[in-house]
Amino acid sequence: MSETAFRLFNQGFALTAELLYAAALTLFLRPLLRGRGGWAAVLLTDLTVWLLCEGLSLPPGSLSVLLGAALLLGARPLGVDRPLMLLSMLLFLNTRISSGLIAESIYYVAERLLPTPTEPIETVFLQAAVLVSSFLLTHALLLCGMVLLLRRRLGRPSLHWRELCCLGLLPAAGILFGQMMARLLFEVKDGMPLQLYDRHPAFAAVVPLLALLFYLGAYLSIVLWQGLERLRGERETYFVECQQALVLRERMEEAERFFRQTSALKHELRGHAMNLRGLAQSGQWEELEQYLRRLDESVQELTLTTQTGSSVADVVLSDKARQCAALGIDLQLDFRWPEAKGYDAFDVGIILQNLLQNAIEATVPLEGRRWISLTGQQRGNFFLIEVKNPFQGTLTWGIEGLPVTSKTEEGASLHGIGLANARREAEKYMGELELHTDGQTFCAAVLLQERSDAT
Image 1 (cartoon, rainbow, N blue to C red):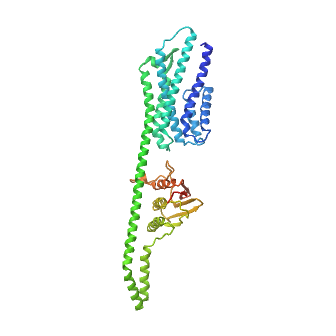
Image 2: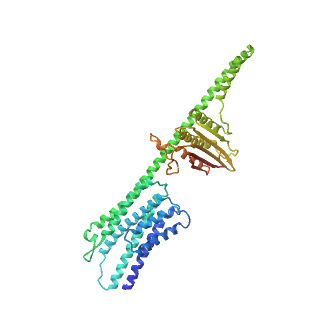
Image 3: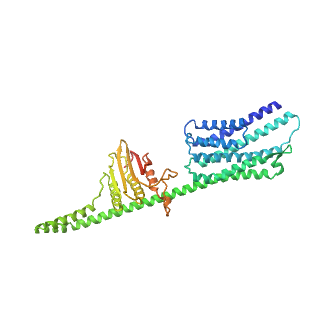
């Protein structure tokens, strides 16, 4: 290889390397992107930032900072949450640096094992080109393999800034370690090039090992976090099952109470008839009126206060109406069971139970007029359930779009799980739970689509 060809090779090497790195970044981010043009935007952004750094001769490390900032600013148009984009960039840059340090050690060992020709000069240029190409190929293979492994593990999680601080700590440390090693690997002293591995041969094994540990640490931190998320989900599921069992027990107790009262009234009916006849025959009309009033109150206790067209909904709403009355909450009901048969009464009962219980818990601590509004109406093939209640202060929204409680007592971490449970039931009907605020009013709306297999 002539000197002119070697210079052309060096010029093309940098562009080829950046194209490979940009392709690896696009491969890593593509599962997160929404839309067909997202991958092209990432690829063009990487190459544009690289050309800018090359044209302005910016110091090493500027490319990573500028590229991360550009993708972070463009995260929303690309359909990626900013915390997830930032974590993805930290993981990719850490993986790129770690794989580069491993490939650099392999290149150093290969260079020392192969004989170094001194002449002719064309052979020297050719061997240098082959070694550098081998280094780039090794780095590209390592990078793609490590990126794919990390991508498969990461998935597309819902990430909060608080979790980002924990998951991004090790990748950030790995990036700083790589930047430091990049400045120490090659130095020039008194006009003589010095290589770290020549002065300290043991570092040829220690440095790639540390780089691999940073990569594995980031990978295992994701595994640990996902395990904790699964445990949290199982804990929430267990809590939901306990709540459903509690609701079922309450319904059974209420049914037993109705049965006992009905049996008692049936047993006493003959006695009541004799008393009424006696009062009427003796002309004690005032006492008769009072007796009838007390008898009517006893009968009213056996009657559900809400008639919606569904016995399950009647029981749930009647129970919540009595609960609100005891707490001094004005419960406004405008709920009618849909005429369509595509809705399971038990599923809708769970939604009503959870939405109203959440509203009651939020309304009880308030001062002044306390109220809850429930509406349910059918719109075509859809059934809309909406619950509104007042609140004070400012709501803080959590990772899954649910409000975060301000409670500090035991079990507060599971507070509001009723909303998550209502969302889970809505998803059975290809529906959704929408939460928003209107001034100091909290609104929870569930939209259910009619289902043909519901009973």
